[in-house]
Each structure stands twice: as C-alpha cells, then as structure tokens.
Length: 278
Image (cartoon, rainbow, N blue to C red; front, top):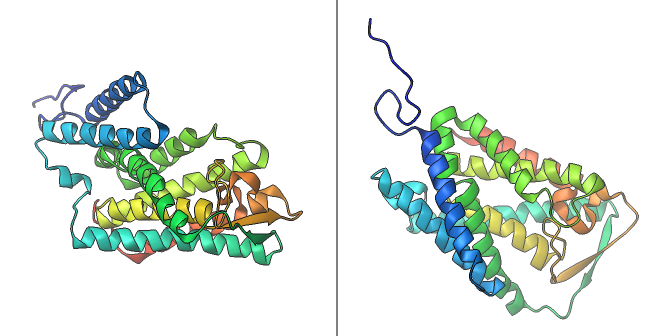
C-alpha cells in the first residue's frame, strides 16, 4: 500500500497549501506596508495608498495561483453595484435601528449640528469608503477565502471574527464595559460581513454594509465609530443610562441594542439561503 508523506508546502494534489499562501500574503503585505510608512504621506491619502497596497498584494498572490482578480469577489458590473447599494442601505438600517432603540429607551437626545450640511455628509463617504475597502480586503479577502478552503466556513468566520476584535482591541475608549460589549459587537459584525461574502461570493455586499454602518454611525448620527470621534449631522446628548446599553463615547458598537440587532441580522443571513461558497 502506498503511503503519503506530509508535505508542508504542498497538499496531496501537489498544490501549494492554503496556509503557505496565507503566510506569503501576510509577509508581502507587511513588507509593502512597512515601506509605505517610510514615506511621509498625508492621512487623507495614506488610507488610499493602503487600499492600493492590499489590492496589489491580493492581485499578485492570485496571479501566482493563475487566477483572475475578479475571483476575489471584485467583479465591477451591475450586480456588484446592486449588491453594494443593498449593503449600504442595510448597514445604515442596522445602525439606525440600534440608535432608535436606545433613544426610545431615553438613552439620549439628538441635537442638530448646524456646522455639518448635506454636502459634508456626501464627502464624508469618501474616507469611510477607503476604510471599508481596505478592511474588507484584509478580513474578507484573499486570506479569509483561503482559510475557508482549508477549514470551512464556520471556523473561518470564528477565526477572522477574533482577528477583527484583536485589530480593534486598543481603540480609543476600549475600556471597562465598552471593551466587553465592543468586542462582542465587533465580533458579530465580522461574522455578519463574512456571511455577506459567503452568501454572495462578492465583496460588494460586505463593503456596502461596512460603509453604511460607519458612515451612519459617525457622520449621520454623531456617535463614535469604534472609539473614533467624528462630527455628525446630529449630535447625541446622553442621559444617565449605563454605558453598556448606550455605548457611550465609544459608539454603538459598545451597546447592547446593537449586539441584538447584529445577532438578528446574522441569523437572518444564515437562514435566508445557501452559501455560494462551501
């Protein structure tokens, strides 16, 4: 009987192991990001440079696999635009529902911020778009998809949910109850975004959800966004309810209502249809 000797680099079919591909991707991204940091770049441009770096790194790794770039889930067509728009609306809806639950529980009142007008709201989408593209390529892109191939959907969602939490663990205001509730919410958000890719095989829906979530939370409703403060069209003035319920200055990601809404959304994604990628 023939025996198989484990090869660290290649599997039984002679293909490079998914783990090796992921390590290579991470090393290339780290080196490119290190070189970026050697150059003085304005913050408004730096995030777009980061998007270019992770896009180029993903493209290069895909080329080594002899795969097209659109296999990553970036197919710029009518369907992509449709899914992106649906995701954008869905992300806004999650945040608005979470905020309204807190407001109707007498958690805060809104005050109109007259320093922000409608054109400011529109232009605020641009930096958040860059952040959404970068984080989705990082956490739902090349590495995430190779982990799915190696260990399956459920394990990949849990692994990258934990990594997403770790990436935000030292954000401003991540202390006390905000650290606990924030970690729960950020983990649930990662699972939701991962499910959005699994269900569609496209990054359009997760990028849209991510963008709608951040933009609505910060620039529209005036809450912190994972601890980062921003000027909103409205400004919430908090009452005396506990921080674990309202999220406080960290933002709605540290609130119980947001956790409930996000959990319901995750269950809805799981129940709605079969995933495109097994």
